[in-house]
Image (cartoon, rainbow, N blue to C red):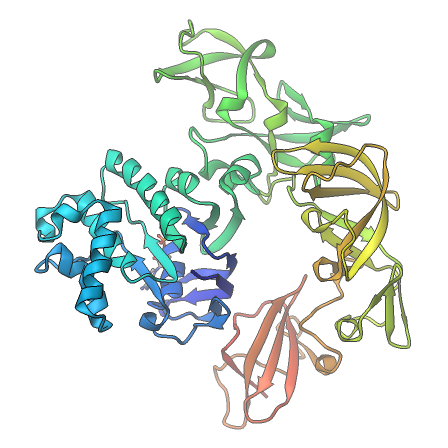
Amino acid sequence: MAKVRLENVYKIYPNGVKAVKDFSLNIQDEEFVVFVGPSGCGKSTTLRMIAGLEDISAGRIYIDDAVVNDLEPKDRDISMVFQNYALYPNMTVYDNMAYGLRCHHVKEDEIKETVRNAAEILGITDYLDRKPKELSGGQRQRVALGRAIVRKPKVFLLDEPLSNLDAKLRVQMRSEISKLHERLKTTFIYVTHDQTEAMTMGSQIVVMKDGVIQQVDTPLNLYNHPVNTFVATFLGSPQMNLLEGKLGKRGEEWHFASGPLDIAIPEEMLLQMNGYEDGLEVYLGVRPSDISLSERGFKTRIELMEQLGNETILYVYLPGREELSIVSSADKNLRLMSGDEISISFDLQHIHLFDKATGSSLVQANVANAIEVEATREEGTIHIDGFEVDEEKAAHFLEDDLRGLELRVSSSDISFDPLPGSIAEKATIKKVVPFLSYDVVFGTVKGKPLVAKTAKAGLKEGEETTIYIPFEKAEFHKGGRKVYSALLTKEDRGVEVSIRKTRSATILLLPKGRKAKDKRYLVEKREELNDSVVLLLKGCKTREKLVVRAASVDVFEGQSVFAK
Ligand code: ADP
C-alpha cells in the first residue's frame, strides 16, 4: 500500500526520442490508475521509470514520501506484470511463484502458505505442479499475476497484461484483475492501449499522447467532459462526430453554424465556456448516441446502415464534414433503408465545442475564474481584499506595485464554507445546475461571472453568499503575466538574464563549446511561467544561486549547465 507521485518527469532516450514530457501525477494509496493512449505515447516508459527499469532524464518520482529516483528496482517494493508473462519454462508453477520469495530468503514454510493462498485467489491450485507449457494463455497470465502478488508489494505495475489473450478471456481476466485489486487493497498502475479496458477498470484514468498527459479524470468525466478533441475521439465507440463550423453571436444568443445546420448554444453551456468570440472556427462534437431521429430535426439521407442486433448504426453526410457521420439508434426494429430521407436532431445537453485551432474544449469543467482584487503592499505587508499574506509567502510576489492584480482560481478550488488561510469574497448566486455528485454554481463576484463546482451545498438561486479561496490555490496575474511564484524569492531574483531571446546573452546554458573556466551550475528547479522558463541554478562549488529566464530551454532539473 503506497502513494506514488511523479513530479515533472521527463524521459529522453539516448537516440533523442522525447518519450515522456513533464509528467506530473498524484496517485493515492489503493487507487487503480490506468495509463491509456495510442501505441508509442510513452505509457510503458512511464511505468518502467516508476519500476526503476528505466532511468529518468529529469524530475522526481516518490513512493510514499521518499524520492526513489536512485533506488534499485528491487528496493522499491513493487511488482510488475508484463504482457509476455516471462515465466521460467523449466520450473513448475509452484516454483515460478516461489522464486522471488526464495531470492529474499523467506522460509520454505512461509513460502508454501503464501503460494497456496495466492493460487487459491487466482484459481490455479490444480496446476501448481505443471510447467508453463502445459498451461493455456489465461492460466499463464494468472501465474504471472500470482508471482507478483506473493511478494505483497506496495505498488502493483501491470503493462498490457491482457494483450496476448483472446477477446473472451480478456473480458474475464478484466473483471478478475478488478476483483484482485479489491481483495489486495494495493495501489495498481495499469497500462493499456485499449479504451474499454481503461474505462471499465480504472478509478482514475490518465490519457496520454506523444509523451504528454492530455487529461486525468474518472471514466465518466472523461467521457462527458473531454478537454480536447483527442480525448473526445479516443474514448467512446463509435467515436464522437466532429463537425466543422463557426460560432456567431445574434443578439444575446450564440449559435454554431455549418452550412444549413444552425444550433443555438444552451445558456448553461455558454456560462461554462472560456475564450470564445464571434466568428471563431470550432468543431462541434456530438456522440452518435446523442443524435436521434426526430420529425423537426435536420434533414439528411442514410448513406449506409449497419444492423448490429441490439442497435442500428446509420451513416449520413453532415455539413462541415467530409466523411460520413454516425447516428446510432437503440431501436432494434427501425424500418429504414439506405437512401431513405431522415431528420435528425442533437441532444443539446450533450454537445461539445472545441477550438479548431488548438483542439481544446471551450467548455471547461474547471473554469479559471478571474477576480479583480485590491492588493496593497505597505512596509512589506501585503493585504489582498483584507486578507493578510504571511511574510514568507509575500516574498514570492515578483512585483512591488500590486495595483491591478487579478486572482485566478479554478472552479473546483472555491469553497462555500469558511476555510482558514483563505481570501473571502462576496458572491451572488444566479443559477445552480445539479450534476451526479456535485453542483455547478453560476454567479457573480464584483459584477464579473463566477463558476464554481461544489459538493451539494444547498445553495439557492438569487442568494447572497461568501466564497472562500484558499491562498495556496490562487494564482496571481497582472496584465496577463503571472506575478507570484513559489519558486522565486526576493533574494533569488537578483540576477535575471534573458538568453536566446536577445543577443545580449551573458549566460550560456549549453555544455557545447564550454571552456575550462566556465562555471558549472546544477539546475535545482525548473518552472514554466507564461512566456518563459525560469531555472533556479545552484553553483556546484559555491552556494551562489542564479535565476535565469529564457524563452525555451531544453534543460531539466538535476542536470548541470555551464555559464560564462
Ligand atoms: P507506449 O507504451 O505508449 O506504446 P513507449 O513508452 O513504449 O510507448 O514508447 C514511447 C516512445 O519512446 C516511442 O516513440 C518509442 O519508439 C520510444 N522508445 C521506447 N523505448 C525506447 C528505447 N529503449 N530507446 C529509444 N526509444 C524508445
